[in-house]
Length: 156
Image 1 (cartoon, one colour):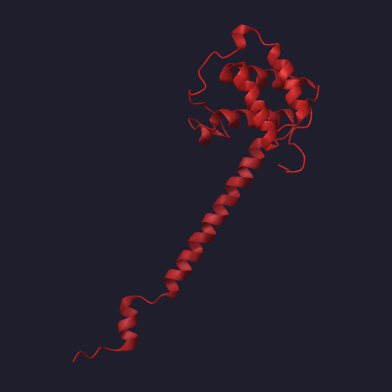
Image 2 (tube, one colour):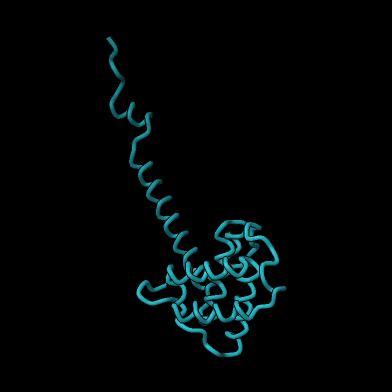
């Protein structure tokens, strides 16, 4: 995500994106309640996930929710996420990760692709660290090699 411009600058009015926007508004309302949802939107703006315009537009969506769509469950209940964010299920960030998935969908982006690239990069780094660790171990002579190359020690 670029740091100079928000990831999601506006709520596009296409069918799939409008549906995702409404689902996201319901999700925020059900998960955090009205006040909590508004605080989340401010937080997402501060993170650079959304623009001030998106925050304003989402506030309008939240105000349009019925009482039945607001805060049906407690925020501290762990969120259950599906692939590719399943590793965040049950964590405090899980609820926000679900929001990021909605934001990504509205932006027309594929978060799954980004997660897969990140996981592949992580595996490459782990492999490289393992190889470096193996190289360091092979460079250090074992005790037996040290004894053989130095010859027997003379104890007086």
